[in-house]
Image 1 (cartoon, chains in turn brown, cyan):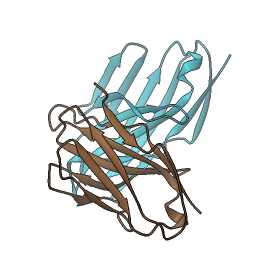
Image 2 (cartoon, each protein chain N blue to C red):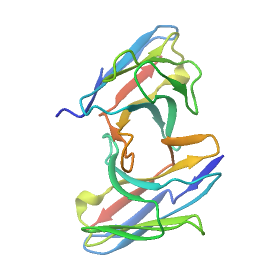
Image 3 (tube, rainbow over the protein chains, first blue to last red):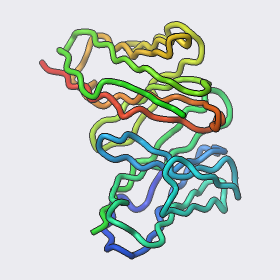
Image 4 (cartoon, rainbow over the protein chains, first blue to last red):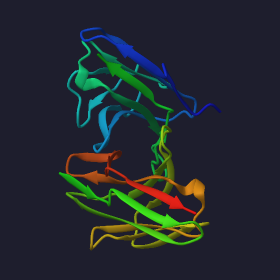
Length: 113
Length: 113
């Protein structure tokens, strides 16, 4: 099992450019999440999904969009990147059984200049 | 809302014991998680408490007191590889379902020889 994978691992964007981050999981998990992690701020939830075809806003959703067309994939889009979106982005997934512990991908380090 | 507090940094000696505290104020509670995050890596699940008391897993133990809004992570026989950030996260709240976690900002633990 690969667990949770993310592409790309690194990316540099200019202000105003767009991009999509891809998250894939092979654990058949129902729930998937996108977080950003900034120094001194901890992990903050951007958007999440409780199943294929469903998405919901988290704590810091502005400037981001998501889609979950397939159960195993969760895409995070930045339509017009801003320097404030410079961050490390983590995807996570969890089962809806048991403790609901979340399993994280390796992260994407995004710099917006 | 959710408020989670944990110390920013701690230092401990190899072979010793360290306790990392976490206090929380939430409008609902459905469990508390501890994650370990090495620098530049993804968080990994360590422990889960939903009932009061101590959960032990090898060198790591986690304690919860729901009435006090308090948890701690106890690390015994410290090893150099335990140098990492430790994240406290709470599940549940007035607008939160079982599927979402709120993370504290993390405690950076440094182990010295």
